[in-house]
Amino acid sequence: MDILTLGIESSCDETSVAIVKNGREILSNIIDTQIPIHEKYGGVVPEIASRNHIEAISRVTKKALKEANIEFGDIDAVCPTYGPGLVGALLVGLSYGKALSYAINKPLVGVNHIHGHIAANYITHKDLKPPFLCLLISGGNTQIVHVKDYTSFELIGKTRDDAIGEAFDKIARVVGLGYPGGPKVDALARRGLPNIELPKTHFENSLDFSFSGIKTAVINVNHKNPDIKKEDLCASFENAVTEVLIENVKKALKQTGCTKLAIAGGVSANSYIRTEVLKLESDSLKVYMPDMKLCTDNAAMIASAGYFKFVNKEINELDLNAIPNLKL
Ligand code: KG4
Image 1 (cartoon, rainbow, N blue to C red):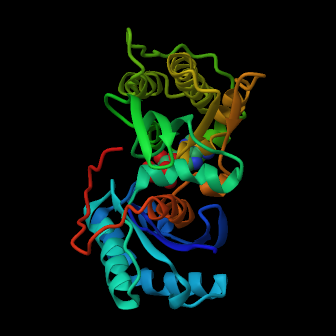
Image 2: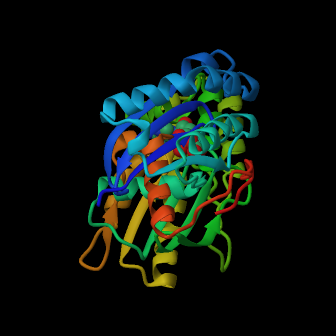
Image 3: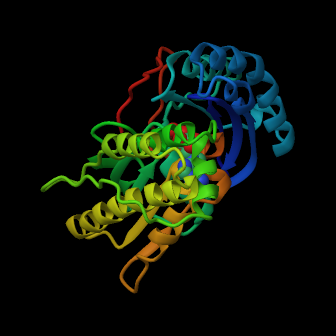
């Protein structure tokens, strides 16, 4: 019998509700983005995000049901994100999900946002099964995850300071591209050359990352050379961070013996990173990437991760709380 999960995502600046069938097939995925609202502040303002989630959540839910052509009674589990993220923003989606679960008498399955990003790959690639290695690169996280099973994960590498998406956004702001910076740096870098030397941080005997050094270096280079070609600066930054990502992924593949590699998170939409990761594909390694629209925050990936928890009987009580710094 088919299982329908309703995913709710409100951890940052997207209010999204989705209906997913059997964890892999999207029936609807409504994303109400607040980017234009936060753009003028140069980043997400938490209180404004919470208020806008409250305003949007009912409307977005109704739209998701209508587009999927189902009613509340058809849902098998309600799956809101409960962390990590902005606490006020998380609480809106989680509280709505808890109320909905109670009202329609269907199980509540709280979803870790990071598991959601990884699950985006299950929607794009119907054949993908654990175990595999996942490079998770987003606005809030940079991790190398050994996905041992659908609900079993081991963190084997992480950033020691900034997330890679934060670095993209900061660099965009410094060179005057605005928010959100990642896609703008990506577009500008395509017209530039990676001809500026920037620091690449590696750690001995570790799969960890650090992006604060390169971020500061880009700021300094830009400050000291105001006429520098911004295209070249963006291309050089992308080139340097990608080299570090690839190097650590290669080490992680060797360490784990994984024969499948997935990428996930908002920064996995970056065209240069996608090209370079794809080059790793070989007879002994298959590479998986989510569709572009599933890389950044959306509720379909949350509904997918929720499905795998639900079938594994990982159900939550209604006292589930939001955890802003929830770990993998
Ligand atoms: O996954 P996401 O939507 O939110 C988190 O869960 O953190 O990721 C948002 C991040 C932002 O930092 C944004 O600038 C970055 O993903 N991003 C990109 C691209 N598209 C989005 N970074 C680089 N290149 C892109 N094409």
